[in-house]
Amino acid sequence: MLETNSTLERATFGGGCFWCTEAVFQEVKGIQKVISGYSGGNAPGKPTYREVCSGLTGHAEVIQLTFDPKIISYRDLLLIFMTTHDPTTLNRQGADVGTMYRSVIYYHNKEQQQIAKEVFEALKDVFDAPIVTELSELETFYEAEDYHQDYYKTNPRQGYCSYVITPKLNKLRKLHADKLSVK
Image 1 (cartoon, rainbow, N blue to C red):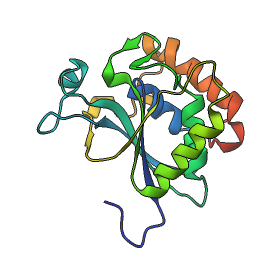
Image 2: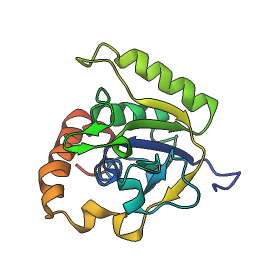
Image 3: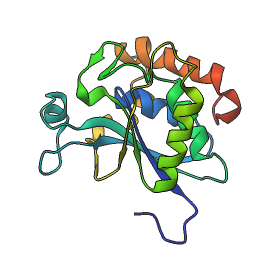
Image 4: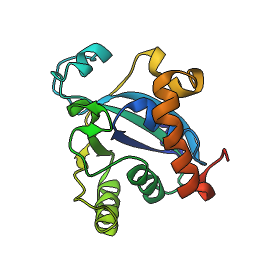
């Protein structure tokens, strides 16, 4: 939990593999912390990666951000999120297929819900297909296993990182250079 006198806020997004989404947001100014994890499922107890990948838990791979809204707004985080993955494919991001890879925004309060709806409306004509990103209230967030945390930072030469995450980061740098702490 955040301290009640804290000015930091949280956001929770799923845009396919959490390694990709984590790597994107680790470069954004105002992000204090990025944690890979799972949310949105219905299985009892804390799920494991293997259980989530089975598709049986209903969980999505997500990241939870702690951010400073004085430096970056929730709206800007959503714009980065929506333009660094494909929000028009259902249960798929590239070669990653299944409900665990769905595009989803888990809002933490009604204000975040409203901002997400406004961003959907603003971006509806930007994509060639309708936005299918799920918008749901966050119920529970489970932190993923330690080896999933900071994955790209610790494995930049791993095949998936080289072929999937590095191009995604290049797109991020091209589209959102003004919002990045790393150029």
